Image 1 (spheres, helix red, strand yellow):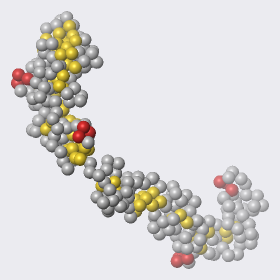
Image 2 (image 1 turned 60 degrees about the horizontal axis):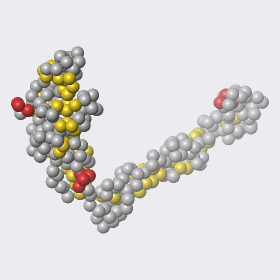
Image 3 (image 1 turned 60 degrees about the vertical axis):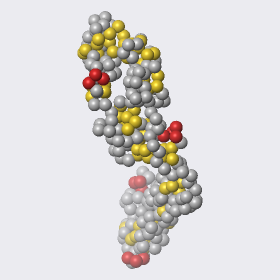
Image 4 (image 1 turned 90 degrees about the vertical axis):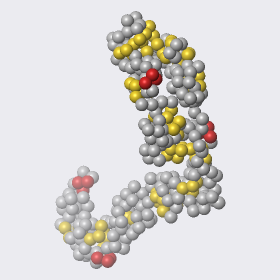
Length: 319
C-alpha cells in the first residue's frame, strides 16, 4: 500500500527559521542551527564561522575588508558569508546576491531555479533535489521528501524517478505461497541466488559454491568444488572421481564418456587403448609406447609414463 507524502519542514511550514536533519523547524538564529525560509540548518561553527547573523539568519565572520583573499564565500562589506543561503549567495569573495528576491534558490553558491516538479525527478529536501530513493528521504516528481522509516514503511524506488513509501505487509506462507520472504518482509519469486526459497519461508542467500535451482540452493559442480574430478552431464550434478571410462575428467570439467568414442580413461584423460604391451618402456597419455628413458617420459614395464621434471628429479633406470 502506497502512503501519501508525510509533512516535511519546508519554506511553507518554516518561513522564518530553518529545517534540521529530523525535519523539524528551528529558529535559525543560533550558531549551530542557522538559516531561514525552510532551508537546511547550517552549523556555523562546524563551517568555521563563529556566529549566525540574526538579521539574515546566515553564518558570518568579520574579516575586515572582505575580498577573494580572505573569503571563499561572498562578501557584504566587512562580513564574509558561506555563500549558500537565499539572502547571501555567491563565491570567490564576490558581492553576495539575494536569490530570494528573484524567486530563485541558492544551489552550489549560485542562484538557480528552486527544487520543484519542473526541476527534480526525485524529491526536495528543502531546496536541494535528492535522488528520492533513500529510506529517510523518499519521493518523486519534485515533491517534498518523506521519511519512510518514521511511518514503518520502506522506500520502493524506480530507476531515475525517485521512489515512494510502501507499507511492509506481513509475508507468510499464506501471502507468499509460491515464493520466499526477504529481510524486509517482502514476497520474492524465490528464484534468485540472493533470494532463494519457497512456501513463504525466509529467503536464503546461496553461497558461492551453490546456485538457486527449483527454488533451492543446490551445490554447483565446478573447478572450485570439484578440483580433482569431473562433473556429470549437468553442471549442477555431483562431483565424480573422473577415473572411469564412462566418466573421465578433471578440474571440474564436464565428464567425458571415453567408451562412446572407443577410448579408455587413463590418468583422467580419454586416450587410445594402443599401449597394451610395452614391457621395455612406458605408456604416454595417448597410449603410445615410449622408451621411458627421458625426464619427461620416464618409466618401465608398460606403466604410465612419469614426468620427472615436475618434481625436479632425474629419470634413472626407468624408475
